Length: 182
Ligand SMILES: CC(C)(COP(=O)(O)OP(=O)(O)OC[C@H]1O[C@@H](n2cnc3c(N)ncnc32)[C@H](O)[C@@H]1OP(=O)(O)O)[C@@H](O)C(=O)NCCC(=O)NCCS
Image 1 (cartoon, helix red, strand yellow):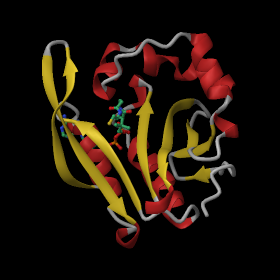
Image 2 (tube, rainbow, N blue to C red; image 1 turned 90 degrees about the vertical axis):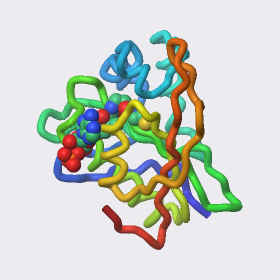
Image 3 (cartoon, rainbow, N blue to C red; image 1 turned 135 degrees about the vertical axis):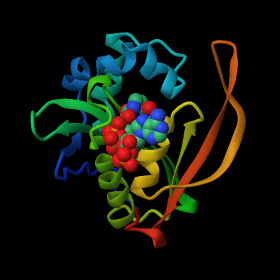
């Protein structure tokens, strides 16, 4: 039985992943306020700071998901979050998502953070399958996931309606027997 209540610290070369808290909200705000970040994640919702504080302040109590802050080791700065959620207990699966603040993308932090939390999902939580969705207009994310070991397995056609245009989403996954991968 996976112990999602235990919130680990996962250390890589570039980043450390540790439990996210309410105090991380100011650092994470650019992820929610940047128009391009919202487009890439297909986020239609608007979150105010109070709602975000409530959300991040309660992540440590969740026994069915894992929300970790991504901290850049070189600066000690919180630069994003990495999440295993939508735990499907009978099938030993989870969804994965990650977001970084706009000014740190493209430096390898996302790929490493993905490898760290996915490795934890397989090695410590005992998951069999971890999957995600990435929009067709986000080749950087697609590439980062591929480097971390995810494989494309299908397309959800027209899954997102963004500013009048229908956008496909690619489903990607990685399975425990394939790990370590990428
Ligand atoms: C997605 C995300 C986590 C990836 O992390 P990252 O640190 O930016 O990615 P990395 O630097 O580790 O890797 C990016 C890869 O994409 C490649 N890349 C960048 N732009 C690209 C493009 N337009 N087309 C193809 N590949 C591209 C880079 O060259 C690199 O691959 P390489 O190492 O083979 O050269 C991060 O960019 C992010 O948070 N973006 C904003 C929100 C978002 O898109 N979230 C994901 C929603 S599914």
